[in-house]
Image (cartoon, rainbow, N blue to C red; front, top):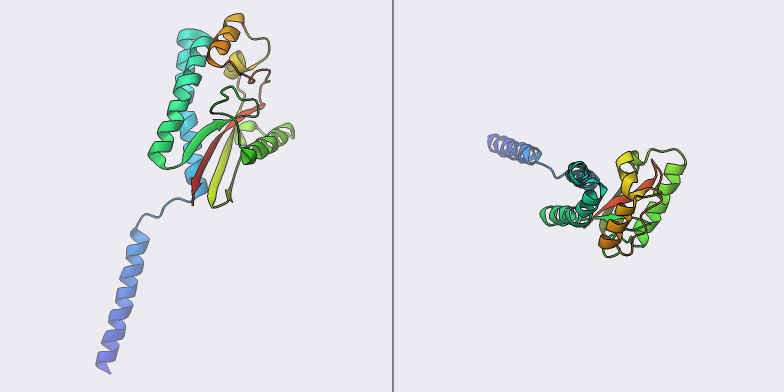
Length: 189
């Protein structure tokens, strides 16, 4: 009987130690949280660069940052994280990188509907599993600074710079608070 108790006690202790070891291991964050963090990181890396460029070179300087720095930030985040990070819009400025696929287009249309219904664009996001991928989008709303390059009645030098960087630009005519586009983040599960 003593041996059976010893074996049972040993097995129970081993199970407790295994459970404790598993609990102590850091668990990966859920995909939704990872995707939201990456979208936020993209914005937090781009926004100060845009503000600095605007302060130093006006809207034309900011356009150069959007054209060169924003794609580099997305590529860097993608390479570092294993997720695919990009910007998309229904009215794309960069036809080679910002055109949404069918899923992104449907989500952007829903973002527009939600914004028109009164939801603040900064608070609009959506994520789901699609064909063995986790897909997430965070809306990017039009802020006052954005109107200098994305608004109505742009200055001549801004229009000229836009034509130089984005010959197929559709991303103007926005009003404050509208959904300008979104950060799109995806990864196979």
